[in-house]
Amino acid sequence: MLNRILGCLYGKALGDAFAMPAQVHPDDTERAFGWLDSWQAAPADHIVHAGLPAGRITDDSEQAFSIAQAVIDAGGVTLEAAVKGLVAWYDRVNGDNSPYVGPSTRRGVNALKAGEDPRKTGLWGDTNGAPMRIAPIGLLHPGDIEGAVADAVTVCMPTHFTQPAVSGAAAVAAAVAQALVEGASLDDVIAAGLRGAELGRAQGRRWFGCSAPFKIEQALAIAASSADTRMKLRRLFDEVGATLNVPETVGAAFGLLAMGQGDPKETAILAANLSGDADTIGAIACAMAGAYAGFDAIPAADIAVLEADEVFQSYEVRAIADGLAALAGASADHA
Image (cartoon, rainbow, N blue to C red; front, side, top):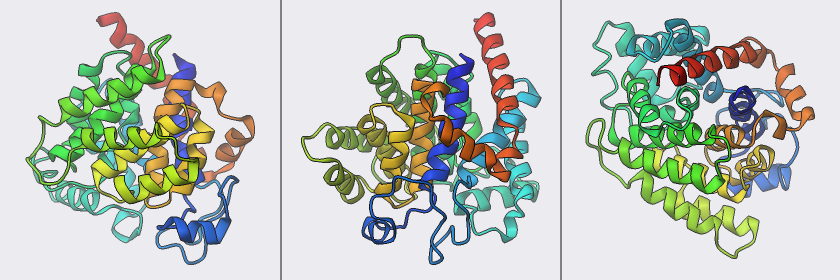
């Protein structure tokens, strides 16, 4: 269990940091790096990450780790713990002046800090902050899709309580929960993600746009097609999408998970070359891959790069893994 929990947390950081330097459009990523398959710093003209060194994690991992720590401190998932973890991260990065804070998160956290009701502060949140930080919640529910979805709903509420955001987050949490089951196949993990997405669609404020389950299915069809890898990535970018839109983000992440056959490093490389919101898509896809394949599937050289990053170091990820493992074990014993 601990191996898979560590795999999820380190996989999240791997996908995040490895894909961080990718440009918004795949043509620009190719011009800058060719095929991006090694650790790179962000280009000086990067729209968001300019100046970040190779191996640097971003808000995708940081928010997940901060919420996980707050949940550990609280002894389980509560609305108060979700708020505490988000606000702690926001203050830690000086969120009011940070270019990395997403629009829904900024709106929600500022409302929370103004004393508004956390059951209402997320009613306009429709971007991909919810699925990008939810993976640790799935780790608390080995094999329990419904439990993972229920806690995902709680964690979404303060900033992203719209149907697309909850559906996307529920898909990721459910997939991670199923990945912890001994002997689970990659097909089992993906099926759990689709089930979670459907359950999540019943929660949150009604919102417009396509559904996460539709985009996941679309991405899986592209992943299973006979096209070569570059063509599949281009089709994911053009047809599924790779923006901050939740169904696009989550759909693309499941497509990459399938293309990479659950291997964390291969999935990270695919995310980097997909481009778009690559660090977020990579963080989600590789968190699922890491939970499925385990910590031992991540190359030691890549672990060393992550552990050399001062931001990653500051979150004491191995201690977070121990805390989540203890909570997951307690939950299983109670069940």
